Length: 292
Ligand code: C2E
Ligand code: MG
Ligand code: MG
Ligand code: MG
Image (cartoon, rainbow, N blue to C red; front, side, top):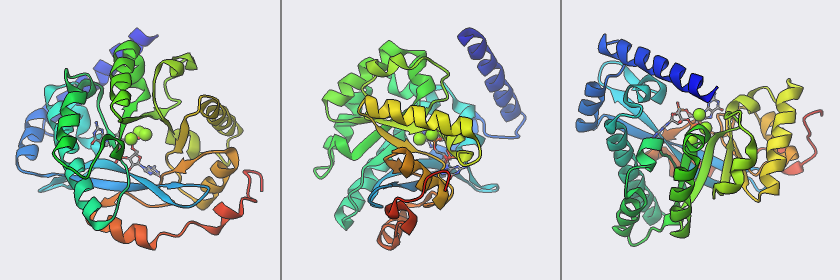
């Protein structure tokens, strides 16, 4: 089944590249130019602790400020460089920008860990962890724990041994890892014991219908129970309403991220947002469960 999935994936990416060639969406060349012209930007989405309401982190999310088409989401351009060397150049730009931004925030007193999405290809570049350590070394205020490296569950599963080695090396040097889109891998979960990830990010597809769909609720209960048994922090993505937050709190989830808390925002907006943020009353009155 994995083979078939892999094959279909290439069919999809070929189709994307084909459309790109015909000028409908991003192409490798277009993205190379965009990087050179500084058209890539990062937005940041807050993550909050459901029990205390505290802001506990920010996820960096790349956008393309396209001169004609406006602000483009990753889905419109990342597929064009999937598993292409340019994906690593983009990833390197993202890391350098995030670290510089984190250092600037440090000086302003905003001292939150930043989550960064790392592609499988980038993570598996020889010397990835060394380079990252060197990059951080240029900023005396920063240390590895200021970054959370998010790796897709699907990427980790494609090369469990290779990825677990890089993670173990990174973890030894103080970096923190999260498994992104957790639960979408349709895998047995025994691999979790091999991956030194501190955080599991539950995919938003399970959160979306949690209040209406008993199956999604059951999956969430299972995933949160499993994460707790393994001593990993659970981050829920796609928390769109206060009711989602209350239900997730009731289920034992630690951290939430979603439009119901804040949309991803430009870096300049973050300090103001963190000052203004107040958690909804329902979250700390703890009486709300998914059934009432
Ligand atoms: P992700 O890492 O799972 O990020 C969460 C995505 O969900 C983001 O989409 C975010 O804007 C969106 N989101 C947040 N809250 C909600 C909500 O309440 N409802 C809904 N419907 N969506 C919500 P975005 O920014 O379009 O990014 C999509 C994906 O692109 C990311 O998914 C990540 O896999 C990838 N990506 C983004 N930035 C980077 C990057 O710098 N490097 C790499 N390699 N991948 C990136
Ligand atoms: Mg992510
Ligand atoms: Mg995700
Ligand atoms: Mg995702």
